Image (cartoon, rainbow, N blue to C red; front, side):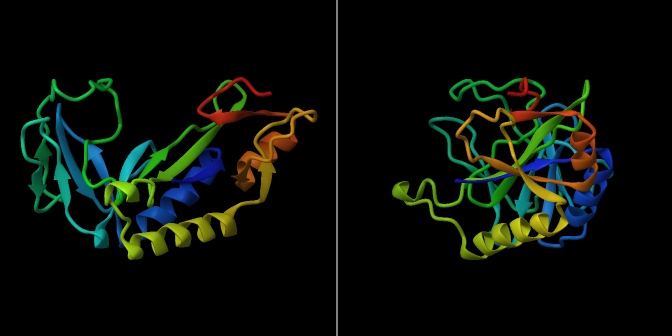
Length: 200
């Protein structure tokens, strides 16, 4: 399972959004009315959402333990997902639709600076984590994942430790973009874990 850790501020978020909006192989899966979802090529503001890698293939919606998955032939047309009592319930504000297989999308979680703390944002991909179950990642999606990682690394100011405690042996690092880097260099705090965790 792959995770790219990012420290970004509001201005950095605009650059990340521009990169993702201009990538024709990606589409954002956004929430409409209750239980309604659709794919769009671009969005206006960067926020937590699920990103479909279009060339990896179609999307399937799981509808319950004893019901077949439903093929979404054109995710750019909206589709509805009914509540599934047989599957673990999720919060109403959960930003991701239920989709299968889980190898053809990336999960973006955005935490911009709040209360003088730069949150730790992430983009995650399951990759070949479930290969033992026969669910292998598409090779083109794998290449695209590493492409995104290279582009984010090129855009960052510096790769910095996530843990600020000098006594910590942790080697976990994150890509720190220019705006967030300046905030931190000016004495601002940064979250050591995804979200707004109290800094170490």
